[in-house]
Length: 389
Image (tube, rainbow, N blue to C red; front, side):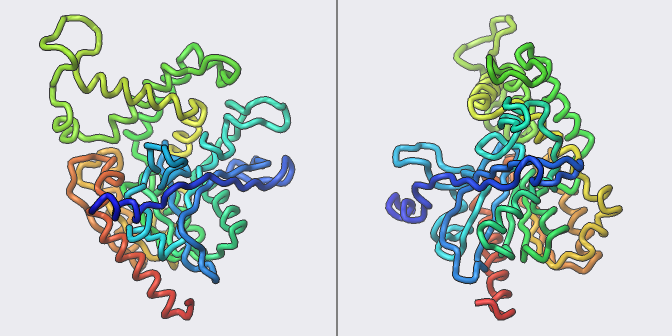
């Protein structure tokens, strides 16, 4: 694709928008029973909502993502949104056809209400006083946003990793409001291994002397603990093959090892870099709350079985897994597919052979694009056959 054609297929400059609802006594009722209010949701949108609001797609971001799914925040911005190659005119989430929305999750730190927000009862930041949230709570906040936008039924929800968990909640509990669900590199419940990695990350943060029981907003944040948490997490997003291809055992800026404890291998320097850049854009308390929400996510326990979770769904499903993903391995996607098939639901599945580990859903855009494009086209045709223009 030429540079000119590439620019024409981009969403261009976009600006975040905000929706606020509820009060201290009339806010969002969480799964814990607590009521949170007021709640602010940061979101971005791309394309145009049609007259009957039937062409809306909600993108659901992963753990460290945000509302900025595509485009740029200014004309000189060099960092596009996290799924930039998938959203825009002529792209799989075609903004000539669809109205695409992405919101920062409840509990996040990129514009939506989270532990870094001000608690109206105290006038101070919530910190660890923020209520424990679930993946379902995130979806309930998104439903309030859809109501605000006048969207009663989404054409599709789509997300990878934690975003896939949100998509599963939408399709399981609120299928009357979503026609199709695209789930990439996700799971119906976190494994013991996944819970263990999250626990290490939280302990790294909370062991940082600067953490101060989550009350660090008026001083130095726990950057070292958060950096280590990110380093551990980032390892789970890669694979043995991708790390071998990218780094091997190559040394960084030296010809031989110097028998010290300083970082000497390229992979060590890379992880330090990733951890260092992460602390500039993410809140340590949000890391704790979001990772805990992932730990709690368990459709089997919540509904009695995975089959029960999908017993009444009318949504269609496209589920993609990736061969080298060891954080949410393909067998976990197949468990979801089998449960849907046992309930005679409409589901398509593909395991994509890829060396890039869990991050494949962000990197293998060209390979997943035809399947996503075709799935969305089918959903649109189904709406036309049902009498929706």
